[in-house]
Image 1 (cartoon, rainbow, N blue to C red):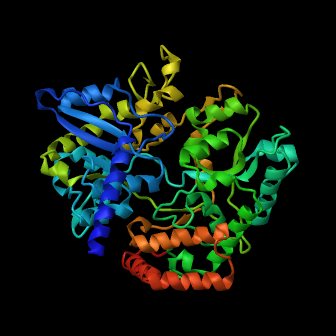
Image 2 (image 1 turned 90 degrees about the vertical axis):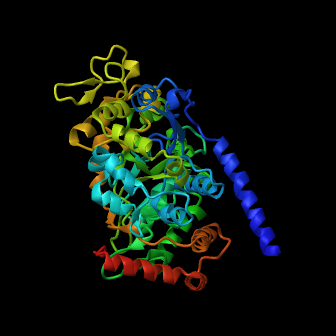
Image 3 (image 1 turned 45 degrees about the horizontal axis):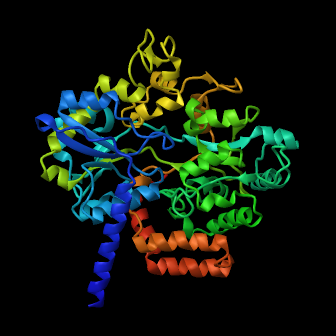
Length: 527
């Protein structure tokens, strides 16, 4: 009886959570379903989480309705990976998933196992252009298990190694400091940025480092913003996929060293104290307000015109530069770990059961067309962009320069560009044009920033996105335990750490590691 009551309570909680989460979505308005148009709901991940969804007058809504007989309803997912999973899992528990939704791969198997998403194998023949351009056999394999593909893969959007360490060069100059190299150098600069008034405003309002918790399957524990500090001790990311020492980094002796270093940053109060509560957008608002002087950030989120403009307005003399991640006591360093992988769009079982499969395939086939490529990527020709002699989009000659696709106000019109980009050199030049910052006049280029970040030290973990994921209990124990050591709830000593690892193993951590290493070895992922 107690078990039954517990199940009922959990179910009610899931339903209540789902209702609250669905109510917060930012969706495009539904149009009248005349001529029996098919309505397709799509929960998407926005290219720029700080901007809103496409507005009602977006040209794509009209084209999709008239050409495909589809009412396309868009809802922006939360920007953080964890919040997205919470929203998706709550919807799955309430059997209220949309027709299509962006999904992290690590929860794809569980959604398939409970029957709330459908196999999409039968759709591939109905969208041959999309399949050839954006997914292909490799993308299909990436979304497959038990012999079936459970998601539409796409390879558009972000570039590999597209984040890096950035530091306020103007603050270094104000304090007469050099660019830090070692972990000791980094800590010394963090202290100076926190206690020595680097912006010269006479206020005690700056910090050395800024971050937020951004956990994914490959950044368990504290997330990607803390990866550079773990890279300094050779334990960056969730997995070590070297032939000599494969396994979970959290079970390696050096992990305690890295965690101790991060704890020293917290104990000395040289990190923005809001880092544990910041969401991605809060973090980005904070650096644009001059709150901290060192961070790991995405190249476009930092340097694209729409994203850099607020900082430029607030600090026209401010100057960020890319630098190497900290070098640890054994000479190790890495911004993070990476693997070339795919984004995944899942299709709900309800959508297929309702006969929406052909309409979904029509939509994706249109998204692979040149019409959609330019419209979703840059906006309307002659309004938001122009084409040069080589058909490369730009902004020269626009009647109203304020409507250029590079302007902050126009970002909502290109929120889905990450799904259709082909990542050619010409496209990258167009996507990340060189420009003059509006207030300072500084020459800026997100593309040059990307190239700089890509050449910094990174750790390659091929196939990491396909490795087994931890159970909910192990994941919770892992993340809570690491945080408890940092906050002082658990004293960080060798004995206490060893005891925690032993408990982790007993809960299933060691078995998880063995399953991952066995799979990586069988799949030839070890390097």
